[in-house]
Length: 244
Image (cartoon, rainbow, N blue to C red; front, side, top):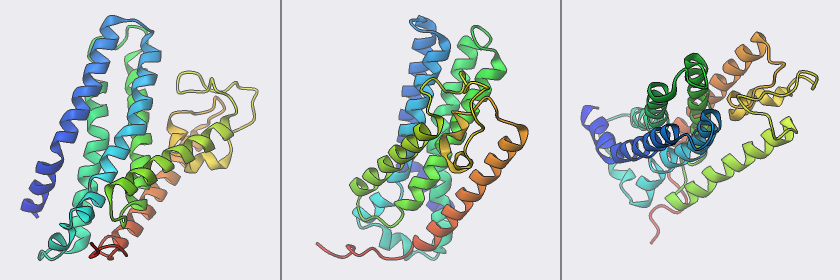
């Protein structure tokens, strides 16, 4: 188990370093330069992170192993396939959340309490991490059996586009964001929001404590079901494996 975990870390750590460097530098330079408001800069930073980090994390864990034909040797190890799957899941969670944590810490050090309060900024990054992880679980589960990283990337991007379109359809207001909620006179949010990963970033002003708890419960339940299904599919052969 330790050697397997080290293998995954050794192969994937450059993604964590790259993502942390890019996002950290973006936050540091942008907040120090103050070309735009802190609020707007963080919205750009976190939106790009939520869209791109899950794609980068999910497509390079299993699909790349199938494409390089190394998955068979990994599954032949005296380790249960489920354990291999959960190790890859753990690495994927780290690759998705790690760079956002780094960017959040840098943002709090540089601009915490300046234009946005420190708790508000910390909460914003926490919500962004939650949205990114939710998208990662969708992408990871739906690409677990794909034979190439290219196909996995296409499916991952399709997941982003699908949920973005659903989000736009629900909100019907381009100004809605984590800092600019929907007007209070608009109707309560659709129950479809509970299943949408972007519920963490586009909450309506009419959000109640019950809605927050329900959204967290539904998102956790969906993630558990997706991972359970993916763990069952992990060791199943793909139709194109073994072909030239």
